[in-house]
Each structure stands twice: as C-alpha cells, then as structure tokens.
Amino acid sequence: MIHVSTHILDLSSGAPAAGVSVVLERSDGEAWTVQGRAATDADGRVREAFGPVTSAGRYRLTFATGAYFAARGVASFHPEVIVVFDIRDARQHHHVPLLLSPFGYSTYRGS
Image 1 (cartoon, rainbow, N blue to C red):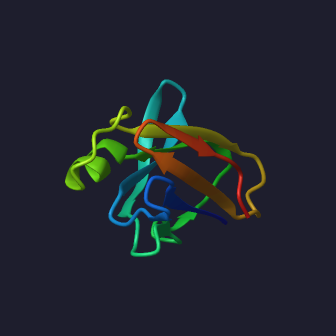
Image 2: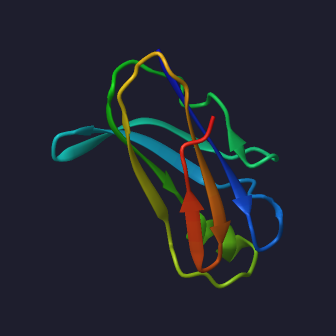
Image 3: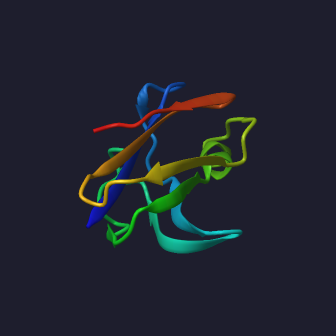
C-alpha cells in the first residue's frame, strides 16, 4: 500500500501553513476520483489522513491556497495550487512538499 503525505511551508512568514484544505484525487482517464480530504495541521502537514492508496496511477493534490491567504488578510495570485504526479511503485511512500508564497510556489518529490 502507498501512503501520500504533504506539508506546506509559507515562505512569506517562514512558518508552516496550518489549516490549508487539501484534496487527493486519482485519475480515471478523463475524470478524477476523490481519494481523501484533509487540512494541514499546526505543523503544516497532512501525514496519513488520506489513508492508504491501493494502486499505482496518476494522482493530484489540490491545495486551497487562496482561502489560506485570504483568511490572513494577504492578497495572493493563485486561488489554488494543483500538483499532478505519477505513482509507479505501490510499495513506496510518496511525500509532496509545497513551498508557498502569495505570488508563487515550488514543489518536489520529498522523502
């Protein structure tokens, strides 16, 4: 079984981004099926709230970044960040970090 986790660092504050809504979906060809929903904890993390993912395939994480910044009174450019990635090995943990600022973001395959 595969576990997908994520964490968000708000680069504008230098702190974890707590309370960001995140949705994990799996591609079914043209459609996407929700696999789980969560919000980042006080450390900006979603550890195993999505539960185990049972098969390889194309997945995406959608982060509600606009709502996060709006709640803090900060103008931002991206209402959401969508990260699409492929899971090929069903035995590996997949960690997808997000480095976030009001006007940009970066991501990578974490460990």
